[in-house]
Image (cartoon, rainbow, N blue to C red):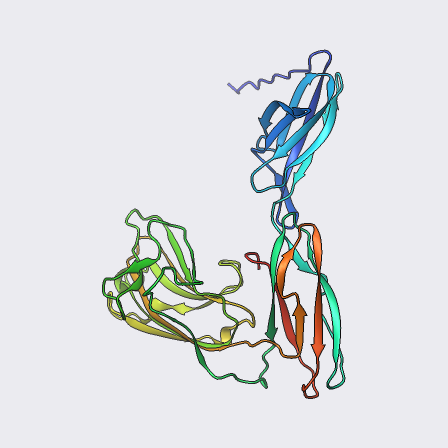
Length: 368
């Protein structure tokens, strides 16, 4: 027997009016509106809250009462800017009041896609542009000069940029972690380090909870580099028989997993025996994207095995400041829904004839 659909429609009582509406949430930069479930809806008579509810899965809310007013409806949700509106209940009428809640986050962009100047020798010129924050919250920024390195560019002498044996604080100063399994992630151990008294170590989760654990260096502006490190793990569980885990090495651009990260290689490719230290060396220079990066060590696996990491060395060259232009201010705060003027000074003093290129990066951490 087919099921019988049952519907009940309740109408407003005589003399009652109704307020109804839909609440949508906007992502950072006021994009991608979507219904907001669970937002707090408050009806106020003056400063007194007379009714509260929350939005349903479709972002809808409603309230019915005897005709009257004026009232205020206030919509709030953690991480969003609170909105409110005034209304009056009219007998036998539904008043509609929809809301879009903005993310309480900054969205900083530049008003100038490029800056170009032609100067005679030994002269200067100023250009201006604005940093524009279309987000609701204040946004911190930093301006970073990045020279464009060409085949004919100057090759800087190699220098040690990172040397880490995990003998101090963990994670090391200016390093970060991305953790998916807090009970089994990167930590330190004093059992059989390669050098010194401590190593970075990660145990597998015997409950077979997936692990995707990252250990990331500070941000670097590499123009060239060679990375080496020592690691060990189980050839049986991670490489040959089961291949249940990997120690991946990445060049991380902006945030982890953004689609622009560059896989350098695997530490486990160097392993020849179970839990025996092996050195991996990678030339990063041909892989570098020409901007700020971090080096990421990723353990990924299920039902894998312990992996250890020690004595990391990164030598190479960082991009230097551009000598022929400067900007002010170089860092600061762009107010929400506001802008901030930036002055750029081009200076050809002592610069030989030619065409020079650079990139001025606007960093709005942690969003890029």
